[in-house]
Image (tube, rainbow, N blue to C red):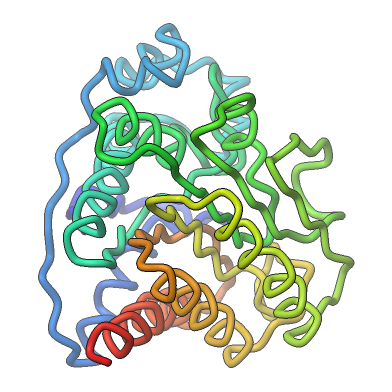
Length: 299
């Protein structure tokens, strides 16, 4: 799932790479793997207001977000960012619908897991994961959803927005000492020490995910597939390699397919001065998930 409106050209190149989404699609295209690209629509205002404070939704749509909130988000909310912020949750919802039909689909944006009810934070405006999960359950598409957050930062906004719900399980595996300083309470949090590498990360994932899948029995997995756990990431504090990330993604896909659970992935975090390298990490995650699931389906 991709939309040209995901890409916003900016004069200043800050920490958040606004052109990352285009670079990811270029990296995917250069692999030669056949893709069917679906364009999302903006998420309806009433869907946004079902999760976010209507006053905050109005601030984003009207491009009148107060300066303090814009600083917390990390960039200004103009018409282009506002439109992308409405398209991205629509993309995650569409990817989930496609995953229910095909087994796997990816949104080439999304994973905005820091956004709270009345404000954005940490480069996140609207929380596409909570929004999509809420809408899918409201519409009766599924009755239980696992939001699996593998970004290096805890999914605090997602945890807060879904707290107390028995139909949404949030599992966050993250660097304990990284942003945010104040953690929310997910259904299950696994905070890892700085410099955790491939072996210990995969051990933590293997110790948690199968049990959650077997006990919660979700009908869909929404995956926040951030690649900022990579050792070279500008904002990460973990020490994973390319192979470690690939092993992570293969494990998630295999566990989902073993139980016939559809999987929809979102991009999540990935930061660094070498934007092409970051984009390639995201592209590899999408391809690894796709290849693992395709191989299982073929078997």
